[in-house]
Amino acid sequence: MLEIPIPGYKSLHFEHLVLDYNGTLARDGELLEGVADALAALAEPLQIHVVTADTFGKVHRRMADSPCTVVVLPKEQQDVAKRKYVEQLGSDRVVAIGNGRNDRLMLKRAALGIAVVEEEGAAAETLLAADVVCPSILAALDLLRNPLRLTASLRS
Image (cartoon, rainbow, N blue to C red; front, side, top):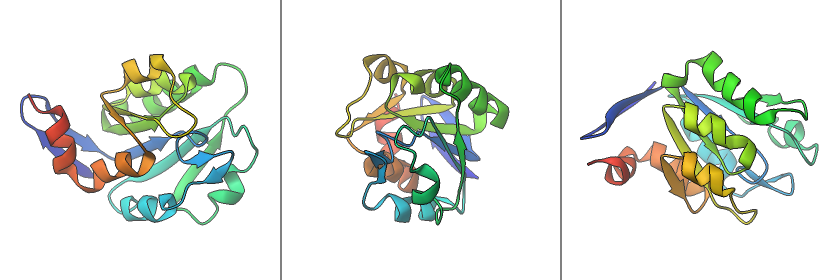
């Protein structure tokens, strides 16, 4: 479990990290450099879940050595499926990270939603649903590895 008290906001207690794959962890289906190490560093305090449409069909191969559960969703209503996945885990114990329009509901529902803007960009609706917006997945994961950065962004 990862606990982060944020003055004037709330105390966050995370058990799960739920992430999108393409556009968030990967570009064109290929895992971004440094992501595997960053996820491994977070695997001790958090259970990691990659929930994806798997647009390029590479997620299982690229995530095979990572300490995470990979879930490939059906093509229809992916936004709803991602939200339901977060709810199943207990949304008050989830930090979710994504960039696409189909990530907006899970970011909104999670205790903490982080939008990332990699080369693929990010959907405007998803940015509005997020609690925090980061310029990269490594910056987003570093917020969890260095919680005072998150405190600086969210405190009143």
